[in-house]
Length: 190
Image (cartoon, rainbow, N blue to C red; front, side):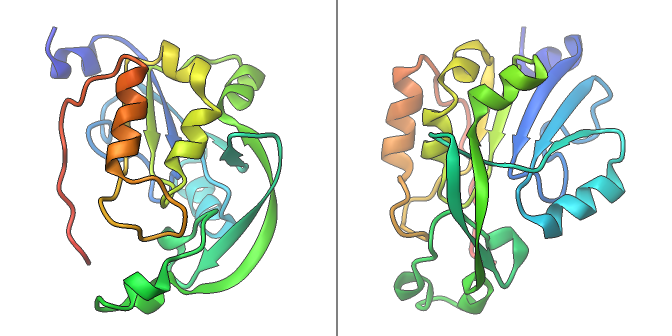
């Protein structure tokens, strides 16, 4: 079965962590997708509730522990993260001010495994786009990763955020869990 057949063969549960903007490719527009959005940033969560009123939305930060995390609200909402922006690096490029922290707040944090156990769902696919915090979420989602067919993970090759794991470490983690790299989509500085 090729990937297009897999994506349309049956209902698929997609956990979209960092769901700002809604489902992205390859899931966007497919009628058989049952998404669960995870978005701790109130700015994005309110818009998701407005645009997708029938989709389950979890307004919690995910991490590798249960407790509280610092969340850095960036000037541009999509740049917000549990990690501080690496402004020394970012300042070398155009428009770095979009990463600037306008406010740091403390949020309750949970693990991906705990949140999915609470809702009684095993995801078929996991999408992580959490501005450098992907590895911590994977550490808290070992059960979900064991059960998932695939994952789409945003990774960087350079440190946009302080303390983030870069592509080699993320790739190694996923490979050690039995995943194979299927595709790599290039993205360029906005």
